[in-house]
Length: 480
Ligand code: NAD
Image 1 (tube, rainbow, N blue to C red):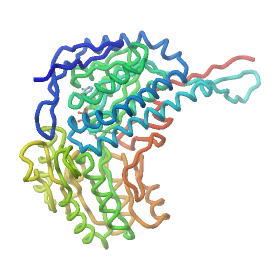
Image 2 (image 1 turned 60 degrees about the horizontal axis):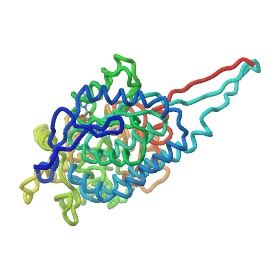
Image 3 (image 1 turned 60 degrees about the vertical axis):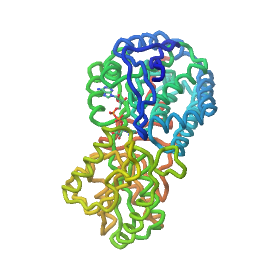
């Protein structure tokens, strides 16, 4: 059995925790690593360290913070291959997908390094007042010690989207990775340790949600919790944060739609449906799991989609030509199979998939699954499945497609496929979603905001909005 890794990094030093957790490779079900993880006491120590470091860090120059962020980007870049390997082993995602994740992390740290560089000049701004008797200036200041809690589906990416702006803003952080996928964050933490940050600015406490996440959300010295995960846990985090009136940013679930309009390029539509439904084995908050197709195209679309879905190579993340890997663990695997089973019982028609591939005896694999005739009141249509499951439904008019897409308690993203610029712009404007892609795969840039409407989010990540989430606004008014 491999050595136990320290899963706690506080005040510039690695420490053992109070309990050992096993980390599993979901493609083989074998134990990948054993990690000594923290508890409420480790959280207290981490917040102690972060609080002590805050005054100096918050008064550092933007240029100094930018230089350190750039060092993280450089470190991640130098360790790209190992990080990809770790992500694929721990997450079950194909190596090419892990490469996309690592590149996103590099881009995010570089972007916020640039933002930090520019902060010295833009920190204080004069404010125009309707009176000559007074003058005023606006300052944006780091909000304090922040807690970052992230999920397992894009572990390092969801971390970078919080960590880079928090550090750029001048906040000190306590990061809690998912207990299911801590390995990439452990390597990232070592890169940060090697970058030369002052002790206490960055702290990491691996562990379970109850042992680490809950006390972090409850600690009165933590000014803000930025959380990405499920709606059920998001509610708990918000309730705990409410007790000390701390700010929360929440990135939660989705039930997003892909709209294939009557003049769509069908091959493109099929590719985008597969990308939106089966990337990361469908374990995406942004999964476009509802596919709405114009009446006139639906038969041809379903034929092509079925052929493509059945041809997707589901395999070990390191296999040649792998297109889709494993789901994250047994719980998620059984949860998705349960959704599929209940969908069939509710009267939906299973077109393809719905079971594990016959050639894979081990690992949490499920074939790409497509349903039609899904009842509008079924769980399959309304709940986040978080697995490789698409539900296809025809529509008669543009208005009907928009109404179907918007009929959800979520509103994270949407995609539209059509050859008409005018139509796609009109439809994009009518969709209740934080990001709409037109004839495009789910590309994400650090410059564009991430987050959604309704129960998908509170706040936005990335761009200047991601930075503002970690800042307080102060006005100073002087009598002239
Ligand atoms: P989860 O809610 O189970 O866990 C998320 C994190 O919260 C983990 O680190 C977990 O340990 C921690 N946690 C659990 N209980 C806690 C508690 N009581 N207090 C504080 N922390 C606690 O989510 P998951 O299963 O890891 O990830 C899947 C979910 O994440 C999906 O619902 C998905 O939609 C969502 N997600 C959203 C986005 C987005 O940007 N909107 C991105 C990725 C994932």
